[in-house]
Length: 309
Image (cartoon, rainbow, N blue to C red; front, side, top):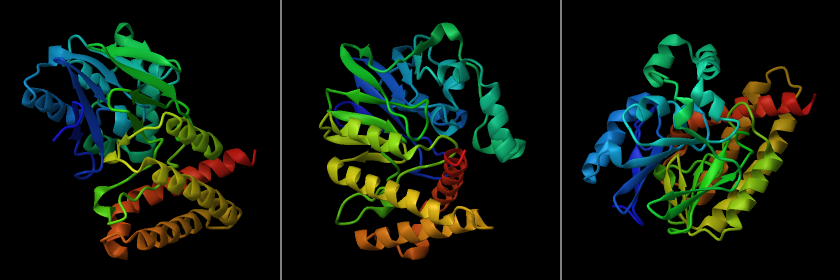
Protein backbone atom coordinates (compact mmCIF):
# COMPACT_ATOMS: atom_id res chain seq x y z
CA UNK A 1 0.00 0.00 0.00
CA UNK A 2 1.48 3.34 -1.01
CA UNK A 3 0.55 6.88 -0.15
CA UNK A 4 1.29 9.82 -2.48
CA UNK A 5 3.08 7.44 -4.86
CA UNK A 6 5.65 6.51 -2.17
CA UNK A 7 6.54 2.83 -1.81
CA UNK A 8 8.60 1.40 1.08
CA UNK A 9 11.06 -1.25 -0.11
CA UNK A 10 12.73 -3.67 2.30
CA UNK A 11 16.36 -4.04 1.21
CA UNK A 12 16.73 -7.17 3.44
CA UNK A 13 19.99 -5.83 4.88
CA UNK A 14 20.81 -7.80 8.07
CA UNK A 15 17.15 -8.69 8.80
CA UNK A 16 13.63 -7.98 7.61
CA UNK A 17 12.21 -4.52 8.29
CA UNK A 18 15.58 -3.07 9.28
CA UNK A 19 16.73 -1.15 6.20
CA UNK A 20 14.35 0.63 3.81
CA UNK A 21 14.72 2.26 0.45
CA UNK A 22 11.93 4.31 -1.09
CA UNK A 23 10.46 4.40 -4.57
CA UNK A 24 8.62 7.61 -5.50
CA UNK A 25 6.48 7.50 -8.64
CA UNK A 26 5.05 10.54 -10.38
CA UNK A 27 3.36 10.45 -13.78
CA UNK A 28 5.24 7.37 -14.95
CA UNK A 29 8.66 8.59 -13.79
CA UNK A 30 10.47 7.24 -10.74
CA UNK A 31 13.08 8.12 -8.14
CA UNK A 32 14.74 5.99 -5.49
CA UNK A 33 15.74 7.42 -2.11
CA UNK A 34 18.56 5.32 -0.65
CA UNK A 35 19.14 1.84 -2.02
CA UNK A 36 20.76 -0.45 0.54
CA UNK A 37 23.63 -2.64 -0.63
CA UNK A 38 24.32 -4.24 -4.00
CA UNK A 39 22.49 -7.35 -2.72
CA UNK A 40 19.28 -5.27 -2.85
CA UNK A 41 19.50 -4.43 -6.57
CA UNK A 42 17.15 -7.27 -7.64
CA UNK A 43 14.58 -6.02 -5.11
CA UNK A 44 14.81 -2.47 -6.45
CA UNK A 45 14.28 -3.68 -10.01
CA UNK A 46 11.45 -6.00 -8.95
CA UNK A 47 9.69 -3.06 -7.27
CA UNK A 48 9.77 -1.16 -10.55
CA UNK A 49 8.37 -4.13 -12.40
CA UNK A 50 5.55 -4.51 -9.87
CA UNK A 51 4.52 -0.92 -10.62
CA UNK A 52 4.62 -1.47 -14.38
CA UNK A 53 7.82 0.54 -14.79
CA UNK A 54 11.15 -0.26 -16.40
CA UNK A 55 14.67 0.72 -15.27
CA UNK A 56 14.65 3.36 -18.02
CA UNK A 57 11.79 5.15 -16.20
CA UNK A 58 14.00 6.05 -13.21
CA UNK A 59 15.31 9.63 -13.30
CA UNK A 60 16.99 9.89 -9.90
CA UNK A 61 18.75 7.91 -7.19
CA UNK A 62 19.07 10.13 -4.11
CA UNK A 63 21.43 8.88 -1.40
CA UNK A 64 20.88 10.71 1.89
CA UNK A 65 24.47 9.93 2.90
CA UNK A 66 27.17 7.48 1.90
CA UNK A 67 27.05 4.99 4.79
CA UNK A 68 26.98 1.58 3.14
CA UNK A 69 23.55 0.50 4.41
CA UNK A 70 22.12 3.52 2.56
CA UNK A 71 24.36 3.87 -0.50
CA UNK A 72 26.59 0.81 -0.75
CA UNK A 73 24.61 -0.53 -3.70
CA UNK A 74 24.39 2.78 -5.57
CA UNK A 75 26.97 1.98 -8.23
CA UNK A 76 25.56 -1.47 -8.91
CA UNK A 77 22.02 -0.08 -9.13
CA UNK A 78 23.07 2.79 -11.40
CA UNK A 79 24.48 0.27 -13.90
CA UNK A 80 20.89 -1.00 -14.28
CA UNK A 81 19.27 2.46 -14.63
CA UNK A 82 20.29 3.92 -18.00
CA UNK A 83 18.69 7.35 -17.56
CA UNK A 84 19.15 7.97 -13.84
CA UNK A 85 21.46 10.41 -12.15
CA UNK A 86 22.81 9.97 -8.65
CA UNK A 87 22.24 12.85 -6.21
CA UNK A 88 24.83 13.11 -3.41
CA UNK A 89 25.90 15.58 -0.74
CA UNK A 90 29.02 17.62 -1.66
CA UNK A 91 31.00 15.75 1.01
CA UNK A 92 29.63 12.38 -0.13
CA UNK A 93 29.81 12.68 -3.91
CA UNK A 94 33.60 12.01 -4.14
CA UNK A 95 33.11 8.70 -2.30
CA UNK A 96 30.44 7.62 -4.78
CA UNK A 97 32.74 8.42 -7.71
CA UNK A 98 35.74 6.72 -6.09
CA UNK A 99 34.64 4.42 -3.25
CA UNK A 100 38.16 3.18 -2.43
CA UNK A 101 38.27 4.93 0.96
CA UNK A 102 34.76 3.75 1.84
CA UNK A 103 35.73 0.17 1.00
CA UNK A 104 39.02 0.36 2.89
CA UNK A 105 37.43 1.87 5.98
CA UNK A 106 34.60 -0.63 6.13
CA UNK A 107 36.91 -3.58 5.41
CA UNK A 108 39.16 -2.50 8.28
CA UNK A 109 36.14 -2.66 10.61
CA UNK A 110 34.33 -5.74 9.28
CA UNK A 111 36.93 -7.81 7.42
CA UNK A 112 36.74 -9.00 3.83
CA UNK A 113 34.46 -11.98 4.46
CA UNK A 114 31.83 -9.93 6.30
CA UNK A 115 32.11 -7.15 3.69
CA UNK A 116 31.26 -9.63 0.93
CA UNK A 117 28.42 -11.19 2.95
CA UNK A 118 26.75 -7.99 4.13
CA UNK A 119 27.62 -5.40 1.50
CA UNK A 120 28.57 -7.21 -1.70
CA UNK A 121 30.21 -5.34 -4.54
CA UNK A 122 30.76 -1.59 -4.16
CA UNK A 123 30.91 -0.07 -7.63
CA UNK A 124 32.04 3.45 -8.63
CA UNK A 125 29.49 5.80 -10.20
CA UNK A 126 30.75 7.69 -13.27
CA UNK A 127 31.33 11.34 -12.38
CA UNK A 128 29.24 12.44 -15.37
CA UNK A 129 26.17 10.81 -13.75
CA UNK A 130 26.60 12.40 -10.31
CA UNK A 131 24.71 15.55 -9.29
CA UNK A 132 26.14 17.38 -6.27
CA UNK A 133 23.29 18.56 -4.04
CA UNK A 134 24.29 21.69 -2.17
CA UNK A 135 21.91 22.89 0.55
CA UNK A 136 18.65 23.90 -1.12
CA UNK A 137 19.23 21.91 -4.30
CA UNK A 138 15.85 21.19 -5.93
CA UNK A 139 15.17 18.59 -8.59
CA UNK A 140 12.07 17.66 -10.55
CA UNK A 141 10.41 14.26 -10.82
CA UNK A 142 7.88 14.80 -13.62
CA UNK A 143 7.21 18.27 -12.16
CA UNK A 144 7.15 17.08 -8.52
CA UNK A 145 9.85 18.98 -6.63
CA UNK A 146 12.23 17.13 -4.32
CA UNK A 147 14.32 19.47 -2.18
CA UNK A 148 17.64 18.52 -0.58
CA UNK A 149 18.49 20.16 2.74
CA UNK A 150 21.83 19.81 4.51
CA UNK A 151 21.26 18.00 7.84
CA UNK A 152 24.51 17.26 9.69
CA UNK A 153 24.67 15.65 13.12
CA UNK A 154 24.61 11.96 12.20
CA UNK A 155 27.12 12.54 9.41
CA UNK A 156 28.56 15.66 7.80
CA UNK A 157 27.70 14.26 4.37
CA UNK A 158 23.97 13.94 5.10
CA UNK A 159 21.00 15.64 3.48
CA UNK A 160 17.28 14.99 3.90
CA UNK A 161 14.74 15.19 1.08
CA UNK A 162 11.61 17.34 1.37
CA UNK A 163 8.63 16.27 -0.72
CA UNK A 164 6.12 19.13 -0.56
CA UNK A 165 3.48 17.05 -2.37
CA UNK A 166 3.23 14.59 0.54
CA UNK A 167 4.48 17.12 3.13
CA UNK A 168 7.04 14.52 4.16
CA UNK A 169 10.76 14.20 4.71
CA UNK A 170 12.96 11.30 3.67
CA UNK A 171 15.22 11.46 6.67
CA UNK A 172 17.98 8.89 6.22
CA UNK A 173 19.36 8.68 9.78
CA UNK A 174 18.77 12.29 10.90
CA UNK A 175 15.38 11.53 12.49
CA UNK A 176 16.64 8.42 14.24
CA UNK A 177 15.60 4.78 14.12
CA UNK A 178 12.07 3.47 14.62
CA UNK A 179 11.39 -0.23 14.24
CA UNK A 180 7.84 -1.39 13.78
CA UNK A 181 8.26 -4.27 16.28
CA UNK A 182 8.48 -1.62 19.02
CA UNK A 183 5.28 0.25 18.14
CA UNK A 184 2.70 0.39 20.92
CA UNK A 185 -0.67 1.99 21.58
CA UNK A 186 1.33 5.19 22.13
CA UNK A 187 2.60 5.01 18.54
CA UNK A 188 6.15 4.74 17.24
CA UNK A 189 9.21 4.32 19.47
CA UNK A 190 12.25 6.25 18.27
CA UNK A 191 15.97 6.19 19.13
CA UNK A 192 18.68 8.58 17.86
CA UNK A 193 21.61 7.10 15.97
CA UNK A 194 25.11 8.22 16.95
CA UNK A 195 26.92 5.55 14.93
CA UNK A 196 30.56 6.28 13.99
CA UNK A 197 32.23 8.51 13.16
CA UNK A 198 30.67 11.98 12.83
CA UNK A 199 28.02 12.22 15.58
CA UNK A 200 27.63 15.87 16.62
CA UNK A 201 24.82 16.33 19.15
CA UNK A 202 24.20 20.06 18.77
CA UNK A 203 24.26 19.84 14.98
CA UNK A 204 21.85 16.90 15.09
CA UNK A 205 19.39 18.77 17.31
CA UNK A 206 19.59 21.76 14.95
CA UNK A 207 18.91 19.49 11.97
CA UNK A 208 15.86 17.99 13.69
CA UNK A 209 14.58 21.53 14.35
CA UNK A 210 15.14 22.36 10.69
CA UNK A 211 13.03 19.41 9.61
CA UNK A 212 10.25 20.41 12.01
CA UNK A 213 10.22 23.98 10.66
CA UNK A 214 8.51 22.65 7.50
CA UNK A 215 5.53 21.33 9.55
CA UNK A 216 5.83 17.83 8.09
CA UNK A 217 2.98 15.35 8.24
CA UNK A 218 5.26 12.30 8.16
CA UNK A 219 8.85 11.13 8.11
CA UNK A 220 10.18 8.28 5.99
CA UNK A 221 13.06 6.69 7.91
CA UNK A 222 15.61 4.33 6.43
CA UNK A 223 15.36 2.32 9.67
CA UNK A 224 12.39 1.73 9.24
CA UNK A 225 9.41 3.04 7.37
CA UNK A 226 6.91 5.87 7.67
CA UNK A 227 6.18 7.52 11.03
CA UNK A 228 3.87 10.37 11.95
CA UNK A 229 3.20 12.23 15.24
CA UNK A 230 6.36 14.03 14.19
CA UNK A 231 6.51 16.72 16.90
CA UNK A 232 6.31 14.14 19.70
CA UNK A 233 9.01 11.98 18.14
CA UNK A 234 11.25 15.03 17.71
CA UNK A 235 10.92 15.80 21.42
CA UNK A 236 11.75 12.17 22.21
CA UNK A 237 14.87 12.36 20.04
CA UNK A 238 16.15 15.59 21.57
CA UNK A 239 15.59 14.26 25.11
CA UNK A 240 17.56 11.14 24.26
CA UNK A 241 20.39 13.00 22.53
CA UNK A 242 20.86 15.06 25.70
CA UNK A 243 20.69 11.91 27.84
CA UNK A 244 23.22 10.14 25.59
CA UNK A 245 25.64 13.06 25.90
CA UNK A 246 25.30 13.02 29.69
CA UNK A 247 25.85 9.26 29.99
CA UNK A 248 28.79 9.43 27.58
CA UNK A 249 30.48 12.03 29.78
CA UNK A 250 29.80 9.91 32.87
CA UNK A 251 31.55 6.92 31.22
CA UNK A 252 34.50 8.91 29.88
CA UNK A 253 37.80 8.18 31.59
CA UNK A 254 36.71 4.80 32.92
CA UNK A 255 39.05 1.86 32.19
CA UNK A 256 36.30 -0.01 30.31
CA UNK A 257 34.53 2.93 28.74
CA UNK A 258 32.93 0.92 25.95
CA UNK A 259 31.29 -1.53 28.34
CA UNK A 260 30.01 1.40 30.41
CA UNK A 261 28.56 3.07 27.30
CA UNK A 262 26.80 -0.12 26.16
CA UNK A 263 25.32 -0.73 29.62
CA UNK A 264 24.20 2.87 30.05
CA UNK A 265 22.62 3.07 26.59
CA UNK A 266 20.87 -0.28 27.14
CA UNK A 267 19.43 0.97 30.43
CA UNK A 268 18.28 4.24 28.84
CA UNK A 269 16.50 2.55 25.94
CA UNK A 270 15.00 -0.25 28.06
CA UNK A 271 13.53 2.26 30.51
CA UNK A 272 12.06 4.30 27.67
CA UNK A 273 10.73 1.20 25.87
CA UNK A 274 9.00 0.05 29.05
CA UNK A 275 7.44 3.50 29.58
CA UNK A 276 6.31 3.43 25.93
CA UNK A 277 4.52 0.11 26.45
CA UNK A 278 6.55 -1.70 23.79
CA UNK A 279 4.98 -5.13 23.22
CA UNK A 280 8.27 -7.06 23.47
CA UNK A 281 9.84 -8.07 26.75
CA UNK A 282 13.25 -6.69 27.72
CA UNK A 283 15.14 -9.46 25.91
CA UNK A 284 13.07 -8.84 22.79
CA UNK A 285 13.73 -5.09 22.86
CA UNK A 286 17.43 -5.77 23.39
CA UNK A 287 17.51 -8.13 20.39
CA UNK A 288 15.92 -5.49 18.14
CA UNK A 289 18.26 -2.71 19.32
CA UNK A 290 21.43 -4.74 19.99
CA UNK A 291 23.30 -3.70 16.85
CA UNK A 292 22.31 -0.05 17.25
CA UNK A 293 23.34 0.03 20.91
CA UNK A 294 26.79 -1.25 19.94
CA UNK A 295 27.13 1.27 17.09
CA UNK A 296 25.81 4.15 19.22
CA UNK A 297 28.37 3.30 21.90
CA UNK A 298 31.16 3.33 19.32
CA UNK A 299 29.93 6.64 17.91
CA UNK A 300 29.71 8.27 21.33
CA UNK A 301 33.30 7.17 22.00
CA UNK A 302 34.41 8.81 18.73
CA UNK A 303 32.59 11.99 19.75
CA UNK A 304 34.15 12.00 23.25
CA UNK A 305 37.64 11.59 21.77
CA UNK A 306 37.03 14.40 19.27
CA UNK A 307 35.41 16.66 21.86
CA UNK A 308 38.34 16.32 24.27
CA UNK A 309 40.94 17.40 21.73
